Length: 89
Image 1 (cartoon, rainbow, N blue to C red):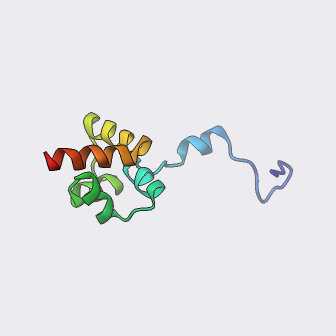
Image 2: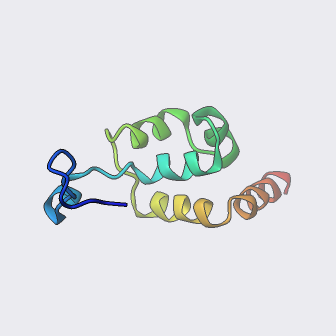
């Protein structure tokens, strides 16, 4: 329980919350799946270096890559199956 009267632990303000950095989408999705970078990159056909750049904030995924990461986040098994089917064809 948050105790607003505790001077050593004041509640965060809206400004404090806005200033907090949210981890990049690629990192959030990968961690939610419990995969390391190499396994995630291999499974979803993303160059490892590209994934590392996205996760470290040195590059931002474009709109297509953002949509792809979102799809992976929503249906990781479905995306993996679709990729496997495409590779087998």
